[in-house]
Structures are given as structure tokens and as C-alpha cells.
Length: 130
Length: 135
Image (tube, rainbow over the protein chains, first blue to last red):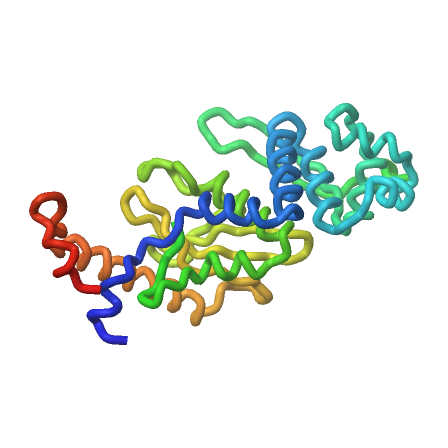
């Protein structure tokens, strides 16, 4: 390509938001996914763990019913959990995360004056998982 | 904003466009949430959302299920230039991908500078008659 030709095309492409709007206009699946991620983002501000479970389940193509069955809990529990209405117990949360191919860890933070907080993270003790 | 090469191609847009809708929506959501409308003096998104690769070159880290995507980008004044996108399989972004992003950024700056040096085209009453304009 001659330098003359290359000068005619500017290096600034589309704004990303414009491309995203175009994808939404063309694809119903994209619009559904965009709305789901917007809802997850909103949920994350209120309840991080609920947002995480909803996002992970959505991306692994599992239904709430499937997660409930495999984790030994009810559909309505998963629904309320993802809606931010329930805080699960540690054993139930551990089982749900295992279904999503993840492991629950427990973190502890100690505030230290004038220093970064000290943190410890460890797996859930066996006694709690029964 | 996507980097556009001298033939008019926008590689990051093409990468996202080729993905299934859910994956494309997630990457677009991350770009919108973490990169758009941020002032130049704002700190970059914290790890693990983004991390430095080399110098001013950074990566936006997007996980979809068990798949990891990386969008390599760099700030240029008020602009965030999306240079290169990959699905990541190994521990670190490869040298080839980093060099490609850096070459695109160098090309972006060179062509932006060339645009700034060009005098503005005549317009209004100063413009040549339509019949004399090059096609």
C-alpha cells in the first residue's frame, strides 16, 4: 500500500460504545446478554457474592434448577440468593461454589494503624462442611 | 476507541464481533465499565481487572466461564486505544502479542502526528468548486 493511500485512513476507529450499540441492534442474543450483565453489575454493588454466583452460573450455561439439584438445595433458594434476598450459610455456599467448579475460602482482615491491613485466607474447615 | 489500521480494519472490533453474543457482551461491558469516560489522570483499574504489561501498555482481563480474554490497550491523552485482543491459553501474554500491540500503538501515534501536520482542508467559500475536486 502506498503512503498516499494509507494517509487517507485515520488511525482512530469506532468508539467501543458505538460498536456495542451496533451489535445490540443486530442481535437479540446480544441484547439479552447485555441486559443480564447490566443487572449483574447493579447487583454487585449490593451483594458481591450473589452477583458472582449469578454471573458464573450464566456463563457455564447452568439453570438455577440444575445448580439447586447438584448443590442439594431448592430452586427458590438459588433464586432468592441470586436476587440478593438470601445470605447462604457457609456449608451451602461451599456446595454451590463446588457446583460452579470453584472453592470457597474464608478471609480474615486485621486493621493495623498506619499500615496495610493484614489478611489471612484459608479453605473452609472440615467441620463446617458436613 | 478501536485502533484502525491503514486499510481500515479494526482488529479488536473484528475479534469481538466474531465471538458468540454472550462473550461479546461481556467484553463490551468491561470496556464500558472500566475504560470508557475515565479522565487521563484517573488510576487504571486495579488488578485483576487490569494489569500493566510493559511501559504504558496494559491489559484488560476478562474471564468468561473458564475462558480468559485479554484486551491490550494504551492511553493516548484523553483516548483509550484498544490495540489487540486475544484468548489467553498460557501463563503470560506472548512476546509476539505484546510486540504486535506496540507496533500498532507506534503506527497510531505516527499517523495521528501526520494528521495534525496536514493543513485543514478548504471549506465553505474557500472550497474549490465540486467539479474540480478529486474523486
